[in-house]
Image (cartoon, rainbow, N blue to C red; front, side, top):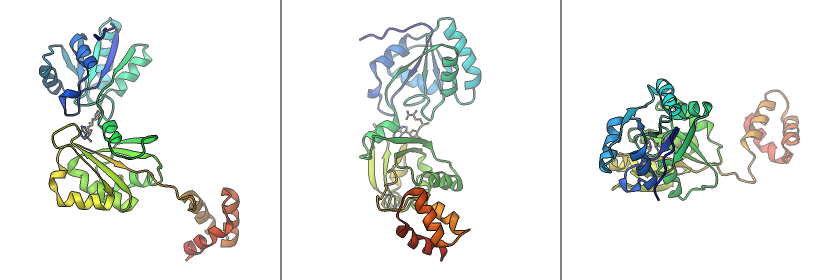
Length: 282
Ligand code: SAM
């Protein structure tokens, strides 16, 4: 079915994350018919266009010129031009440029239309065997270990499946930090080189993943998505929030009173808190 291109519309076009066979018919229709293609990297997109014998005008729109480009692109759209936005791979705006442009266009009342397709995060998630009913896309973790550990620490009690993009050169350090902050027993999945020849999806505890990566440097090549299973709630466990409150109260008042007040606030059994209070005190 041929896609009708509407004038004055910005199309957000997903492109393959490796295997060119994943391009969609609508993406090909839009890329060949729009007036201009705004690319994260024109040379990179040119290769994709050549592979499908598409000849069209391209302009650059990347992290460093997005703010200037957004006015130019909005003006072209107002003049009735149709424009496609693509990134180097996958879905634009997902850890890729385009957010400021799309927000600007929407604020200006211009039409923005998605042309869905590949996305590494979603491809990884749907083949990981981790809960998919609720998940949290976290993009790239910070490159420095201190900041990375702080980010992981803030996510320690996140119950949803967490999805991260990671650079292969940092993968071992990232997994080391996961072991340190979330514990070696946390279940993780590494999805590497999706849709490509060396596609590998490995799932195990963080400790075993670290061991596996350390023994096989080939697994540190290419592109990867790292997923962490969400924190599992033990119905018998006292939640970290309760322990934090107890800790604060113990600094000021006697254990018996601290336990009674905490139990009152959270509706938990007083007795269950005594042992925790004693171990915190000691
Ligand atoms: N917009 C893209 C998308 O929709 O997935 C993501 C762009 S982001 C700059 C690039 C990161 O996506 C890579 O560093 C890697 O973490 C992940 N990625 C991209 N292609 C991948 C692939 N074929 N296999 C695994 N991860 C991939």
